[in-house]
Image 1 (cartoon, rainbow, N blue to C red):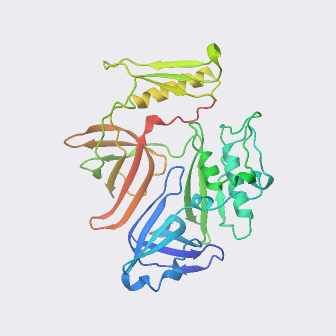
Image 2: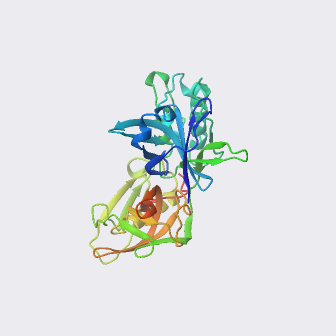
Image 3: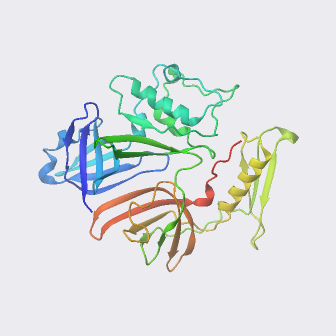
Amino acid sequence: MTYRYLTQDALTGEWLSLDLPLTNVEFGPQLSGPGHLRGELSPRLAHTAIDLVDPGTTLIYVERDGLLRWSGIIWQAEPEGDTLKIEAASWTSYLHRRYDLDGELGGRGPYVRADPCQIARDIVAYAQSIPDGDLGITVDATTSKSQTGTPAEPWHSRWWETPNLGDQFDNLFKAADSPDYTCTVHWDDQHRPVRRIQLGYPRLGARRTDIHFSTGINITHSVPVTYSADEYAQVVIATGIGEGRAKQRSTDAARNGRLRLERTLDLPEVRGTDVLAERARAERAWRQVMGTVDQITVRDHPAAPIGSWQIGDDVRVTVRDQWTNYSGWCRITGWTVHPDTPGGESATLTLDPAESYHYGLTA
């Protein structure tokens, strides 16, 4: 296992460093977000390396055994004593530093019943069409059945509101039936970095039966499980389109020997009763789980070697300790790799209950 950190001028493509001596590094991707990197330059190098990590215009890459594992833009280089602390985030973080100054993404909008994947591509295309704004980011050609904008309320980007491109981009991926995205990078066949926003519909990742995480095998630490009834329910009442008596409604309920608890789910955009019923069922399924695991730290192990999982994967997680006896499917929403801890390489995974996601449900 050999790690290397490289930096590159964002505009010219010139390589600034092919082996930046970072220490105390942590990095990782994120589901529908940019992910992050943090690291430090040692005291004897910090004062000479500032030109190699110029914030706001320098790209940084993480290479492990010849493969690119992460990349992004350095946003901060902060001296702390004799150490220079580096912070970076991946491609969509750049959009949060850009605005629509022309309106409707340079004439690409407005949008009515548009695929959010297409609007996402247009946002990136607009950002990169402006001089000194081209990072060479590619966006997948993925399509989805989700729709954004209606004839009554089209999706607009009005210049007088100074809309932030990053906010616009992220909002496209927040609805329950929206696509997923993550930021990735890889070498092409000429050993040039390909900077990519990966789209997935109905989801990124897959249910994995070939890997698992378990206490005593590869989990070294887990955040204590909180048992709370604040979000618990065995009954979900979902409401859809319509007003008054014409409003669509679907109730999904299960008896399990516990006091009856109910929750409502407002889905005004949903028209189909079958979709409404499925949404209610999926909502009830995850709300009926008491206690969840939201973070684990794992070591490199044949049960799930570091690098074997992907953003969005559902994995089986088993946690056993003096307070917890948990086993269930969890969705990986992000992770942070720690390459150089005293105990060797490890990764901290952030998790959500797999049942809380609704894949491919459309209105």
